Amino acid sequence: MTVPTAKDPLHGVTLEMQVNALVARFGWVQLSKLIAINCFKNDPSVKSSLKFLRRTPWARDKVEALYLDSLHGAAHLPPNDDAVDPWANSRRNKR
Image (tube, rainbow, N blue to C red):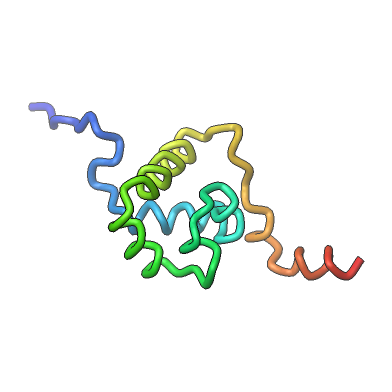
């Protein structure tokens, strides 16, 4: 017997899982550049982002699209360099 597969690629993936994965990959700074919404720019947190995204369908659509692109290894998505080196910005500003 075969197990039926869902046609929806987001089946079983919660919005919280998507936000956490995007933050892990890009960080808040890069995520706010990729999706320009205030919940990613001003004092970002997963909790505040989820609250906003659940009430705002257009923003949720953008997060879901970016999550799917990141799953498929889209070449146009830059990795988060600042996540590797948290002091990178401070060094750039002092030069």
